[in-house]
Image (cartoon, rainbow over all chains, first blue to last red):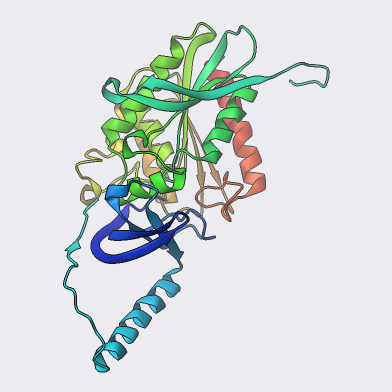
Length: 100
Length: 251
């Protein structure tokens, strides 16, 4: 099915596509049909820059378990960095849920 | 029936056609060689976009004797690889029902102006395209046959309705303007077998002409030979039913 479950979040960083590095300004997170992963539904993250058109996209398609483990790992790494006093805080993210 | 002493061929290319609101959009077009007259088909592509599978499906219908057009329902999202464009549309929650119906009805009108067409136009779609095919057949009286392959969200709950999809297609069943063929996998979750039951009950209630075929051992997307969902036996049977239905109502 097409679940149409999607949320967008503003982000700050860089991504590398086939044509090289570009500035990221948004991540689109969905649970819907993947294009490549061999599953009917996947947790899809598209890191994009809307101003550069549809091709400015770095895509990942993850199983539910992989997505949950990734989230946990990211938080663990950030906790370690915070504990070591290494975090460079740039408060540039705002959450923008999309209701579809 | 094809025999090995026949000469045959198709011509295929990208064309520009008027879509919703008269907007020029691109479309993939394929036609059998010859003077016709031939029946016509409009293909409503799926959520993964105006992709290779749909260009190949356009050839397939042309090979079977149909002048066929597959409009790019994501044209307004910009251009890139089909996956990149489809990902952008996915992030936006899909295209609006008005946009999809306008593009598909525009494709039917466009193709029906061709001298090689016999005046009969069908519509076929899979996944979100199945839903769009059903919607178009309910909202635009330009089709002579409609084929919904596992279209999800034909049956929508009130909390699923929004600005892009303001009406549950099920509620438009009374306006269905042509015979309907539905193909579904019994392992699918959207449409679930219970939702297909609701759809069928609504069709019966309004005395619509329809055929539903439900396949055991198949889920969503069982025609997609490039995906794990592919089920060869069910797909072969399903395609036979598609072409038999088209020949019955469009010849």
